Image (cartoon, rainbow, N blue to C red; front, side):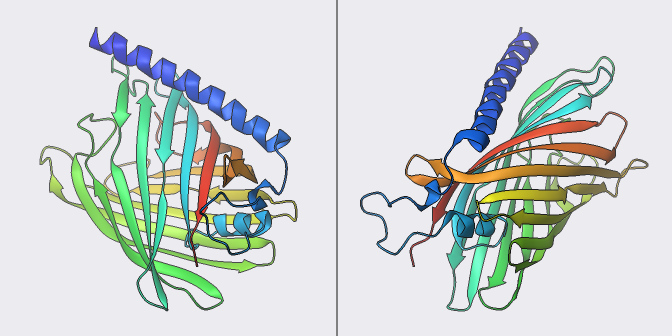
Length: 292
């Protein structure tokens, strides 16, 4: 009964989020450009609002001085022996703090909600929160080259063996990027090693590498190309998982707040046998510019 309930809930979640992805796609096409530059709500800062193009460029910068709350929906296809769909909703808030007149501290949190089919014949599906990851970047707020460095920590947030590691892990992370005109190019990376947790589970030694390239047009439409590569150094084979993602996003509004609506597609050029072959992605990012 418990398994049936999980399957039913996972199916309902996937259907609900698929509707949200379609709505996001419709928003890309239909919502008016420049809505991000509307008059601020009562009680908001009186400074002149930033243009949609400026906010879109800031959104391409992981270390930008604004609070953002992204909801990223992923449907990975061809997972497991029956080539089914794995659904991942990533809640990824970004919170910058000024620690001095020259330095900022940016906290990036990733909370994944996963609905996953069996990964092996005779296995069971899984649904729940995977390991939660938090990154802290110390970044100077001056200079042409944007960079940040700091620690990353992974919390064992699930006991489902196919969803998480059941290990506490930590390591270094960094991001470096350059913005010139409409273009943003950069790379984000981290390395995790386990240091505590379930002794019966394998050790964690995993690298994440995300090179990215974006172009923001004068109409606040952003085209992005990236890869979200992971390397599992503890695996005997198929250590690398390499997707290539292409996405388009547009600045509009979400109630009184500016927001970005994104749709995209990805193809996996390397990965384990039970891993996905391609994926669909939709995202809604609510932007909360900081008061000056």
